Image (cartoon, rainbow, N blue to C red):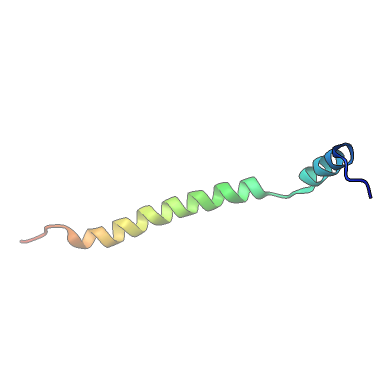
Length: 53
């Protein structure tokens, strides 16, 4: 097996085209983490409201 960039480049391009939904999964994960963080902060901080009636 030769170790030259001329052989690696087409193989790398072919492997990159075969990959699935990595970017979409990353976007979904980021959105879920942000929404979860906001909801978690709201849930924790709502108990610190000054409702002294």
